Image (tube, rainbow, N blue to C red; front, side, top):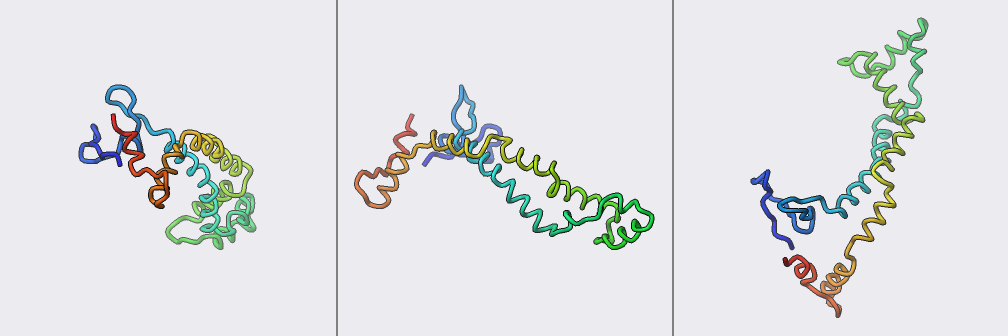
Length: 166
């Protein structure tokens, strides 16, 4: 396991630099480890759909069934709609209507769908990130470690410490 070293800017915090999170780059500099960058981008891209699902769970059907803005401007129905769509007495009915229109735009409109797809593929398609992860990941070392843990022949307990020695 790599040694935790002191970060030069934040000396009271310790970070693991050598292999796990950062890679040395030039004299005294570090860059993010490309595998972990791709893992983070892949997970955040896939989380877009879970985030939309959470918004749907919270909002229920209101964003898709909320009355159109023209109905609020209609002199016959406008006041009644403001009265019956108001949920929180501490917030104006107009602000609440604007919030539900925004939620409808985010969850139920063509623009919202385009934004979700853009967020999913924006940092790179998750399948390409998965390919980058598997091509750079040292699977053989992990196999040797698992063989050691399982008590199989060909296992190597020190497989990672050999690579980290300068």
